[in-house]
Length: 213
Image 1 (cartoon, helix red, strand yellow):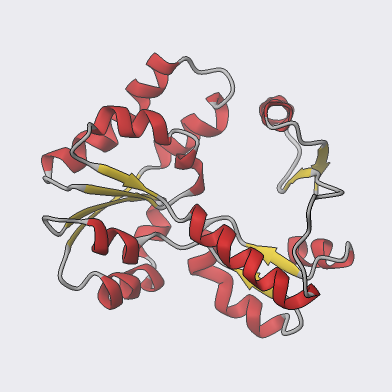
Image 2: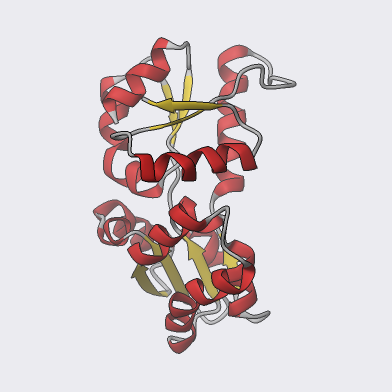
């Protein structure tokens, strides 16, 4: 993460959104210690919101295995959902499916992919499911469809965006009316099998492909 942050800072970024629950719960504290002149906005599971919305106080948390076991996440539950029963599910299989099939999977395939996770939460009688990994946001409509009308499916993106815009206003004194430069970079080691997947994602969202950092 430090290498990626250095790259973003070298391109003039004053605010960096850590758009990953796992990275936020694992590294945010350290990043703020190292880069005191950079504002970081984290992404954490919407546990506080879920606790407010849940009527039966039974909440489902769908995330990575690491996120559900992080002390940071457990502290969020203790601080904001101490009166709730939280059922956590780390679902690496679903994350992998989304990464490799986001732009190609038919709705029927998406519904099949999310069903095991949703069934787990239904079996535990939750009335609110938190999407605690940004991958799952792309399949939110399918998760909601399988969950049904009696279960609320929520995530933290609205809160993250509001916080980023608020911080941006504090830094520059005004909010941008448009984004002049947006490029989609990814991290890791280049792999031919993955390149097309990510390039397709960039194309889907009309964002220029920047390659690997």
